[in-house]
Image (cartoon, rainbow over all chains, first blue to last red):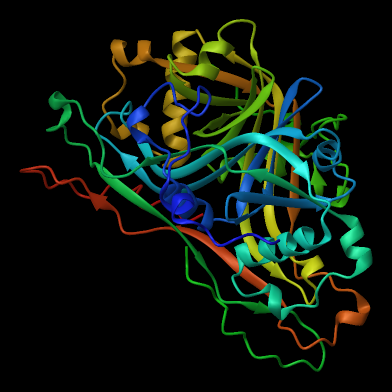
Amino acid sequence: MPTAPESSAEQFGTYPATGRSTPTRAKERAAYDRATVHAILDQGYLCHLGYVRDGAPVVLPTLYARSGERLYVHGSTGSRPLREASGGGLPVCLTVTHVDGLVLAKSAFHHSVNYRSVVVHGTAFDVTDPGERAAALDAIVDQAVPGRSADTRRPNAKELAATAVIRLDLREVSAKLRTGGPNEEPEDVTLPYWSGVLPVVTSYGVPEPAELPGQDIALPDYLPPVPR
Amino acid sequence: MPTAPESSAEQFGTYPATGRSTPTRAKERAAYDRATVHAILDQGYLCHLGYVRDGAPVVLPTLYARSGERLYVHGSTGSRPLREASGGGLPVCLTVTHVDGLVLAKSAFHHSVNYRSVVVHGTAFDVTDPGERAAALDAIVDQAVPGRSADTRRPNAKELAATAVIRLDLREVSAKLRTGGPNEEPEDVTLPYWSGVLPVVTSYGVPEPAELPGQDIALPDYLPPVPR
């Protein structure tokens, strides 16, 4: 991909807050430091990608990978947003969200969710460099299952030709987080309703091998990955 | 809210496929029947809501509720999209995604994800009817934790005034699903790479009661809800 190792500035700096990356409410939950943003992105593999088509918004779930200060998304060369990115670039908003818990307050009004999200605004461009394309496709596989791409049959010329890769640089980025228990109005504290947090946990089940005749391949060491 | 019980036409009909609700690829994964769409929506509580601001897409995670053929989203009256919906309506795309498993094929190319998603296109309108607003707010609480709203201190006038509710009717709607094991090229089947599905499971942890002095409130029967 030829991505250089992250410099300490990249690891420890902050993204500049812009008009559209500054929330209008709950500003205290916003974060712009790279360490927080990278940690949230690195814990996920599914994003919701938004773009504008005929003046209206479209939001589709898709896989992504982070490599340094770049995000990659792939798809069929026939898919709409990827076709549109091959021109002058496609304005997108890429959002990653982890839900950590349901927050149950005494009042309905103060019910909330503990979560960590990252919102990236920018323009996505088609990746044409063969080396960067191949590395990006590996990164997308490894984002979901670290170590997996090296243990697969790699893409051939026909598959590479059928796959579009777009890149979105991390420039206009914000994280938003909520942690902790419910907020309460002082007069509600003694009300007789249970209050607290119901943790939401995402984990992996037992791997289900494909049923192929005559195969007895040991489960690779990288499975199951660390629950997240 | 005064929503009538679902008629059999609503339960068993299909949403019309339109240009933008028809995928350009993997059409065999698309579904338009209400039963499938409702089941996917009813299993979730978090959506990604997309809208257009200054010509660029914005995608934000937020809670939702389904009530019959209507979706509701709430937020602060100060939040951008909710302010904008109070005029002539806000074009939105509301997407709900459940990840069920990571699909590991012999080839990197055929790696995939088992998932169920619903994409709703339409125009969201501000809800002004007091009864519909109150019922929608209850529904949003109950979407995440069924039965919870009746066991809370209900919103007062000040809280209702601070909360905006928008409605998006289910008219232009599609579901997309992938299930099953990996697809393989015939020549890949005997390759020595493990292949199969790594199930992804979302569940609830042990409820964490708020630390309030002098309270010993039993865990309500509705907690924890059925894992989903």
